[in-house]
Figure: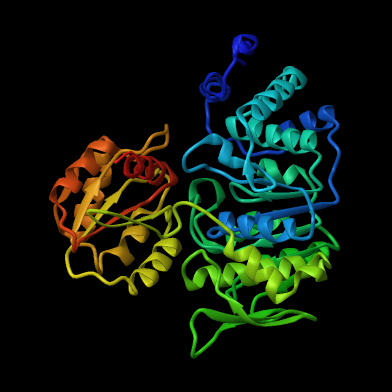
Length: 429
C-alpha cells in the first residue's frame, strides 16, 4: 500500500488523484475491508437508512427520496456515484453538495483510522460520505448501491428498507452475463424481515427466491403497488399502495414515463417505512417538482437542440429511444458517444440506430475507457455507416457545433464521463 502523503494535502484536488492510486484495480468487490474501518470509525447510525440498488434509475430514485423525506422535516444525507460535474455531487446533505472542507475533513478521518487496511477509491469515498453525514448530524441516509449489491461497499450498512429499481444487463464482467446472475448479486441488499421494493413488473426468479430464503418482505410493482398515467392528461398520474391511494398527481419534473415508474417505487418505499404523512398529493407534488438531476434526457439549446443522457446500457438506451419519439425536429441527428470497456456496446447502439444519422466516437476519461478508435470500429461494424473518431471530447463537440444547423439534434450519451464534460462545454459556450 502507498505511504500516505496526505498531511500536505490542502485541497480536494490534492486528495482525489491520490485516492485513485490506492488500489491497482478500480473495483475490488468485498465487504471485509469496509466493515473493519466502519467498526473503527464508530459512527452513529441514523433512524432511517435506505438502500437504492438496481440497474437503471438509481440516481433518480435517490434524488426523489431525498426531496420527499426532507419534507417530513428530516435532515438527509444522500450518497450517489459517479458524479456529473464535481465530486461533491456524490455527497449531499439536505439536498446540497457537501463543501470541499467537509469532504476533506471526512477523508482525513478515514485515512487516520484505516491504518493498514487497503481501500479502493470507491470504498474510501463511501466511508468518507458516511463520516460527513455523521458529522452533520443527519437522521436519514439514502445510499445508492454503486455496483451490484451483495459485495458493494454501501452494503456494509444494514438498511431499514431496500429499493431495487430493475435488473438488466450491465457490469457483466463483475456481476455475471445473464439477468438471473446479476439479480442474485443485486438481491444482496435485502435484509431479513425488512421490506424490499422491486420497481419493475419483470421480476427475476433470483429476486423472489432470495427474498423467500432470507424472509425479506418483497413488494413488487404491479402486484403490491401500482401506478397509471391519466389517459386524457399525460401530465397526471395516480398511485395505489398497500393502504394509500393518490390520484391526480403531477408527473415528476424529471422527464419521461420511466420517471413515473421510479416515482411509484419511491412512494412504495416511503409507505414501507410507515411515513404516512408523506403520502399526500400536495406533499408529493411539491417534492417531485423540485428534483434537479443533470444528464437525464437533459435538453440544452445551443445553435440547435442538444440532448444529454447518461444512458450506458441496453435498457437505458431503449428508454432513451422511447423518449426521443416525442422530440420535434426536421433536420438530422448526430450522436456523440463514449463508453467504458465493460459495457454492451451492441446492445446500447441498437435502439439508437433507428434515428441517428451521424456518429462521433470519443474517448472518455478513466482507466476503463473504450478508446475512440475501438468504439468507432464497433459503431461502423454494427451500423454499416462511417463514424468520425475524435479522441478529445471538446474537440469532438467543437467539430459537431461547426457543422450543425438550427433544425438538427445532437445527442451526447454513453457514460457519465462524457455527459459531464459536454455539459461543461455547453455552459462555457
